[in-house]
Image (tube, rainbow, N blue to C red):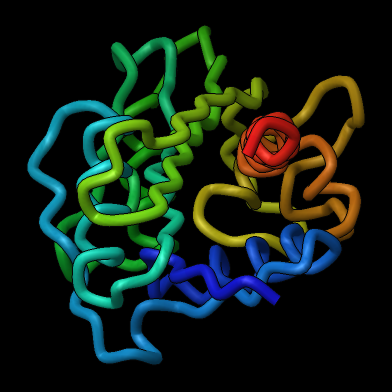
Length: 199
Protein backbone atom coordinates (compact mmCIF):
# COMPACT_ATOMS: atom_id res chain seq x y z
CA UNK A 1 0.00 0.00 0.00
CA UNK A 2 1.13 3.52 -0.75
CA UNK A 3 1.62 5.66 2.35
CA UNK A 4 -0.16 8.98 2.23
CA UNK A 5 -0.01 11.59 4.97
CA UNK A 6 -3.33 13.23 5.68
CA UNK A 7 -2.76 16.83 6.70
CA UNK A 8 -5.47 16.79 9.36
CA UNK A 9 -6.06 15.65 12.92
CA UNK A 10 -9.83 16.08 12.63
CA UNK A 11 -11.13 12.62 13.53
CA UNK A 12 -14.24 13.02 11.39
CA UNK A 13 -12.15 13.83 8.33
CA UNK A 14 -9.61 11.11 9.11
CA UNK A 15 -12.36 8.49 9.29
CA UNK A 16 -13.98 9.65 6.06
CA UNK A 17 -10.73 9.71 4.10
CA UNK A 18 -9.64 6.30 5.37
CA UNK A 19 -12.98 4.82 4.29
CA UNK A 20 -12.98 6.58 0.93
CA UNK A 21 -9.38 5.72 0.02
CA UNK A 22 -9.27 2.16 1.36
CA UNK A 23 -10.41 0.61 -1.97
CA UNK A 24 -7.58 2.38 -3.81
CA UNK A 25 -4.71 0.84 -1.84
CA UNK A 26 -3.71 3.96 0.09
CA UNK A 27 -2.51 3.70 3.67
CA UNK A 28 -3.81 7.01 5.04
CA UNK A 29 -1.75 8.18 8.02
CA UNK A 30 -2.98 11.21 9.99
CA UNK A 31 -0.18 13.71 10.45
CA UNK A 32 -0.64 13.65 14.22
CA UNK A 33 0.56 10.04 14.34
CA UNK A 34 3.95 11.27 13.13
CA UNK A 35 4.01 14.23 15.48
CA UNK A 36 3.49 16.73 12.66
CA UNK A 37 2.00 19.99 13.86
CA UNK A 38 -0.91 21.69 12.16
CA UNK A 39 0.02 24.14 9.43
CA UNK A 40 -0.91 27.79 9.50
CA UNK A 41 -4.06 28.63 7.51
CA UNK A 42 -3.73 32.35 6.86
CA UNK A 43 -5.41 32.50 3.48
CA UNK A 44 -8.86 33.63 2.41
CA UNK A 45 -9.50 30.76 0.00
CA UNK A 46 -9.96 27.05 0.56
CA UNK A 47 -7.45 26.17 -2.17
CA UNK A 48 -4.60 28.24 -0.76
CA UNK A 49 -5.09 26.83 2.74
CA UNK A 50 -5.26 23.24 1.46
CA UNK A 51 -2.07 23.69 -0.56
CA UNK A 52 -0.25 25.15 2.44
CA UNK A 53 -1.32 22.21 4.60
CA UNK A 54 -0.32 19.59 2.02
CA UNK A 55 3.13 21.09 1.47
CA UNK A 56 3.70 21.40 5.22
CA UNK A 57 2.79 17.74 5.88
CA UNK A 58 4.91 16.50 2.99
CA UNK A 59 7.93 18.57 4.05
CA UNK A 60 7.70 17.24 7.60
CA UNK A 61 7.23 13.59 6.61
CA UNK A 62 9.10 13.22 3.33
CA UNK A 63 6.02 11.44 1.96
CA UNK A 64 3.18 12.31 -0.41
CA UNK A 65 0.50 14.29 1.38
CA UNK A 66 -3.19 14.97 0.99
CA UNK A 67 -4.94 17.96 2.47
CA UNK A 68 -8.37 19.41 2.28
CA UNK A 69 -9.75 22.70 3.36
CA UNK A 70 -13.48 22.60 3.63
CA UNK A 71 -16.31 24.50 5.14
CA UNK A 72 -19.79 25.75 4.65
CA UNK A 73 -20.82 28.91 2.82
CA UNK A 74 -24.22 30.52 3.30
CA UNK A 75 -25.76 32.64 0.58
CA UNK A 76 -27.46 35.15 2.86
CA UNK A 77 -24.22 35.86 4.76
CA UNK A 78 -22.03 36.48 1.70
CA UNK A 79 -20.37 33.10 2.01
CA UNK A 80 -19.75 33.10 5.76
CA UNK A 81 -18.50 31.24 7.67
CA UNK A 82 -16.42 30.00 4.70
CA UNK A 83 -12.78 29.25 5.51
CA UNK A 84 -13.53 30.08 9.15
CA UNK A 85 -16.14 27.30 9.48
CA UNK A 86 -14.16 25.23 12.00
CA UNK A 87 -13.50 28.24 14.23
CA UNK A 88 -16.57 30.33 13.52
CA UNK A 89 -17.41 30.64 17.22
CA UNK A 90 -13.78 31.27 18.16
CA UNK A 91 -10.61 29.22 18.36
CA UNK A 92 -11.98 27.28 21.34
CA UNK A 93 -15.47 26.86 19.90
CA UNK A 94 -16.87 23.41 19.18
CA UNK A 95 -19.37 22.12 16.64
CA UNK A 96 -22.34 23.05 18.82
CA UNK A 97 -21.07 26.60 19.32
CA UNK A 98 -20.35 27.03 15.61
CA UNK A 99 -23.83 25.84 14.68
CA UNK A 100 -25.47 28.03 17.29
CA UNK A 101 -23.64 31.10 15.99
CA UNK A 102 -24.61 30.30 12.40
CA UNK A 103 -28.29 29.85 13.25
CA UNK A 104 -28.25 33.13 15.17
CA UNK A 105 -26.51 34.97 12.32
CA UNK A 106 -29.06 33.72 9.79
CA UNK A 107 -31.89 34.79 12.08
CA UNK A 108 -34.99 35.54 10.03
CA UNK A 109 -33.26 35.51 6.64
CA UNK A 110 -35.59 33.95 4.09
CA UNK A 111 -32.67 32.60 2.07
CA UNK A 112 -31.34 29.55 3.88
CA UNK A 113 -29.36 28.28 0.89
CA UNK A 114 -25.88 27.02 1.61
CA UNK A 115 -23.22 24.79 0.19
CA UNK A 116 -20.32 22.83 1.55
CA UNK A 117 -17.00 23.37 -0.24
CA UNK A 118 -14.07 20.96 -0.37
CA UNK A 119 -10.72 21.96 -1.82
CA UNK A 120 -8.58 18.85 -2.04
CA UNK A 121 -4.84 19.04 -2.74
CA UNK A 122 -2.38 16.18 -3.17
CA UNK A 123 1.38 16.64 -3.51
CA UNK A 124 4.06 14.03 -4.18
CA UNK A 125 6.63 16.16 -2.39
CA UNK A 126 6.81 19.46 -0.56
CA UNK A 127 7.99 21.23 -3.71
CA UNK A 128 5.73 19.40 -6.16
CA UNK A 129 5.34 21.78 -9.14
CA UNK A 130 2.11 20.07 -10.22
CA UNK A 131 -0.11 19.54 -7.19
CA UNK A 132 -3.42 17.90 -7.91
CA UNK A 133 -6.11 20.43 -7.02
CA UNK A 134 -9.80 19.57 -6.93
CA UNK A 135 -12.79 21.62 -5.76
CA UNK A 136 -16.32 20.38 -5.21
CA UNK A 137 -19.57 21.75 -3.79
CA UNK A 138 -22.54 20.13 -2.07
CA UNK A 139 -25.74 22.19 -2.04
CA UNK A 140 -28.43 22.28 0.62
CA UNK A 141 -30.17 24.49 3.16
CA UNK A 142 -29.55 25.46 6.77
CA UNK A 143 -32.31 24.45 9.18
CA UNK A 144 -32.67 25.62 12.78
CA UNK A 145 -33.34 22.22 14.35
CA UNK A 146 -30.53 19.66 14.45
CA UNK A 147 -31.37 16.19 13.18
CA UNK A 148 -29.28 13.05 12.84
CA UNK A 149 -26.47 11.34 14.67
CA UNK A 150 -23.93 10.78 11.89
CA UNK A 151 -21.42 13.17 10.40
CA UNK A 152 -19.82 16.13 12.11
CA UNK A 153 -19.51 19.90 11.85
CA UNK A 154 -22.64 21.50 10.41
CA UNK A 155 -24.12 18.21 9.18
CA UNK A 156 -27.08 18.12 11.63
CA UNK A 157 -28.27 21.49 10.29
CA UNK A 158 -27.44 20.91 6.60
CA UNK A 159 -30.71 19.83 5.00
CA UNK A 160 -30.87 18.11 1.62
CA UNK A 161 -34.29 18.84 0.04
CA UNK A 162 -34.01 16.08 -2.57
CA UNK A 163 -33.50 13.47 0.13
CA UNK A 164 -35.64 15.04 2.85
CA UNK A 165 -32.81 14.53 5.36
CA UNK A 166 -29.93 16.37 6.92
CA UNK A 167 -26.39 15.26 6.15
CA UNK A 168 -26.21 13.85 9.68
CA UNK A 169 -29.17 11.56 8.97
CA UNK A 170 -27.37 9.86 6.09
CA UNK A 171 -25.52 6.60 6.57
CA UNK A 172 -21.76 7.19 6.15
CA UNK A 173 -21.57 5.15 2.94
CA UNK A 174 -24.37 7.20 1.38
CA UNK A 175 -22.83 10.47 2.50
CA UNK A 176 -19.45 9.49 1.06
CA UNK A 177 -21.03 9.02 -2.36
CA UNK A 178 -22.59 12.47 -2.61
CA UNK A 179 -20.79 14.81 -0.22
CA UNK A 180 -18.43 17.59 -1.24
CA UNK A 181 -15.51 15.52 0.06
CA UNK A 182 -16.72 12.37 -1.66
CA UNK A 183 -17.15 14.18 -4.97
CA UNK A 184 -13.69 15.76 -4.72
CA UNK A 185 -12.04 12.48 -3.82
CA UNK A 186 -13.65 10.61 -6.71
CA UNK A 187 -12.34 13.25 -9.10
CA UNK A 188 -8.91 13.04 -7.48
CA UNK A 189 -8.84 9.26 -7.95
CA UNK A 190 -9.78 9.74 -11.58
CA UNK A 191 -6.90 12.17 -12.07
CA UNK A 192 -4.48 9.74 -10.36
CA UNK A 193 -5.61 6.96 -12.67
CA UNK A 194 -4.97 9.15 -15.72
CA UNK A 195 -1.51 10.05 -14.42
CA UNK A 196 -0.72 6.37 -13.83
CA UNK A 197 -1.47 5.57 -17.48
CA UNK A 198 1.28 7.91 -18.62
CA UNK A 199 3.79 7.40 -15.82
